[in-house]
Length: 184
Image 1: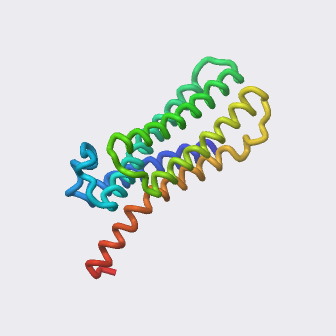
Image 2: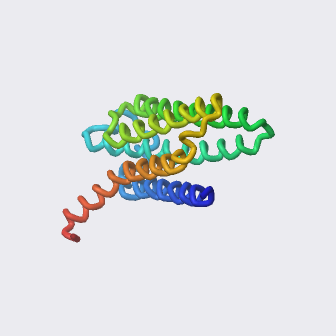
Image 3: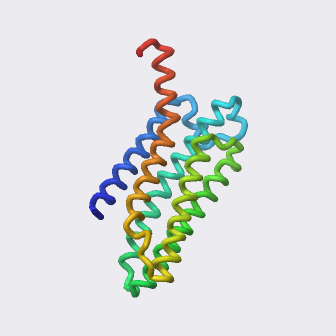
């Protein structure tokens, strides 16, 4: 089952990279502004939504592999089992808090409003952080394995939901552009 989770995680990372590259390709005139633009590049609500979706996709693309590699590194540390669980789940909770904080700060620095996509990604991350905190308490301190069987499927489900939330905006923009061109 671990191989399934590993393959699924790499597929999700590849798809999220595709979303970021698609946003950069589709919005060529905004390419520089997506990375370095400030509040002056945000003239319409569509600009806010584009920048917010891009910031969310970029943050997920950075934090997802970092947290996966951090988790793999912690699992290979020479610690006792209970200590390893405590460090592992605590690191994942801290990564979740860091992700939400960075996502918020990126929006504040850029001066753009939170889109529905960004809010949904933050909510999913918060739920995943709560799940990791529950595992920290249950498995790390109390040695209770009540959530162990559902933890992996929940994490994969949350990651798939994050991907779907991130892909919604580019998909709708692609369909909108094809409809205006009459291709559909």
